[in-house]
Image 1 (cartoon, rainbow, N blue to C red):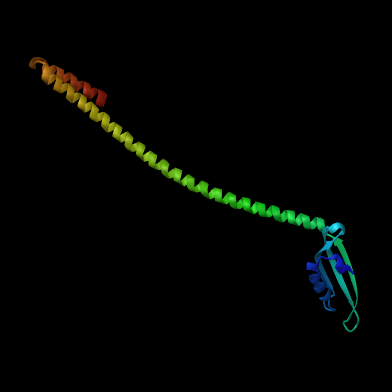
Image 2 (image 1 turned 90 degrees about the vertical axis):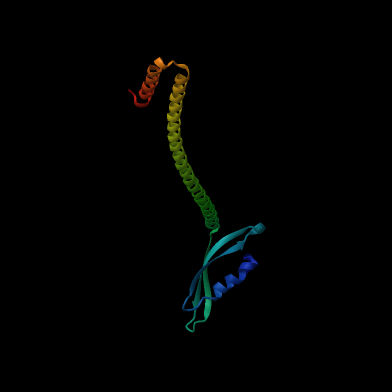
Length: 170
């Protein structure tokens, strides 16, 4: 009896497939596991044909089968590889999303730093101008406090000319 070669969990499906043969659908193909010696399980594909009398009653079966274990193993390997590729693809998409978010943050930070740098440049120019102004003011105060009235005009003029020269490039 061929059913003893089929794992018990597959027997009902095999019998349903065979018993589903009718005069209208006399050919059917199915795949199932088969028990080999020493408990090894392999896969077979069977094509069954029912032969019927003129009243539609089954009178015989013709069946041809082949071992498809290698194909099943290849299909399982392909399925596992596809699952691994899908997981890798999902991880790559997540990484891409993170990189895009990080890049946007970096661009925003770069814009903030550029704006801060421009503000610092303006502030630095203002501080230099204030420093020059204070230097001139201090020199003038020094002259007013230490130089005689006769020489004062000449000393003040030197300071003003020097300040103009450095400010306007005269």
